Image (cartoon, rainbow, N blue to C red; front, side):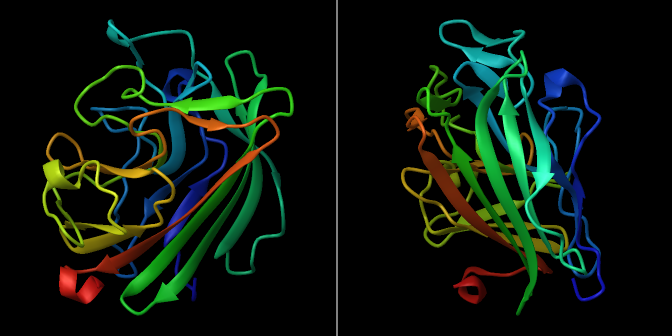
Length: 261
């Protein structure tokens, strides 16, 4: 973008199958060069920069790590699938600021659960630059596909994560929305935007749709997810589609609520 590399896209990652292999962005940087993502952190080795990941897709774990089992808790299962790049949908822009691809969501046996079309666009913004991340999931004609989370499988405490996920650079950032502040209040919020303010950077997330909620972690580990199945499974009907489009402002320095609004 304008001669600057603001993010690297890893199309075919070489990671352990238990970590939910999938394409991801890392490192993502501000225009000033500050890295704002993390990959394969020691606390959650299956967190891969910026990606789309869901822990329960008709019983397949496409998040990585242990699976939350009702009445048993997190358990290692042989249920890990992968999200695989199949083809580019259009040539990349000359400066690499736009990518469009087709991906397959695969179960442990390699059978296709969902087909995804994804578009990523990096563009200049008044306060930095914006990542536009859009995807459409299509279910097979033969049956519905259910997207679930630890919360829908019985975990309490606002753990409905799964969807567009951003693992942040190490540190404990400040988090706030247009109406509330702090991890406890932001987690589960449906406010139109969520800001994360760390050392030398600010990120502003937007684009929730339907019953989506912000999943937020700051103290234990830093991460943000636009959660698709916060309280109940999200079902894509047979032959039907699910589309989402998120925008993330990546800015140097610290922005306050008044500046963002």
